[in-house]
Length: 170
Image (tube, rainbow, N blue to C red; front, side, top):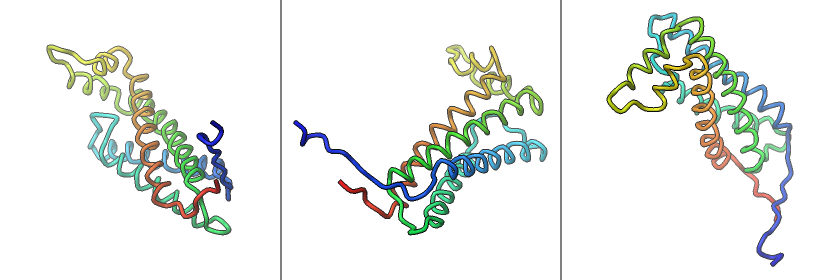
């Protein structure tokens, strides 16, 4: 029975925790800046989810994963290390973007959640529209956080899979 489960050992070559925190804050600030610049240009976002914001998250995750691997002493990174980096980067970016969305709905564009909730009001009202109508500011924070976090975890897996260049020892 011991042969069924094998242990996966791998060497971590860099400090992915510090890099994930730094890259996550940068990514979150870039997405937040996009949100506020779009508002100041008169193109207010009717939803916390935006295709360009998602593309920005994907590009930043791939770029920062590549940059991390490039800056390692041996330029070698395992799937595990890059996955941990990507997930950490994404979760920190999600928290920063969630707070930016909270500020956006609370200060810059308080009607955004109402506009978004009204787009869901039909005969069979959805739960998302109901939540947006009940507490718009907290809904914006959680929706911005959750959507960014889930997207970043999926993107982190593919970035780690494509950019790894060392296989773990068995």
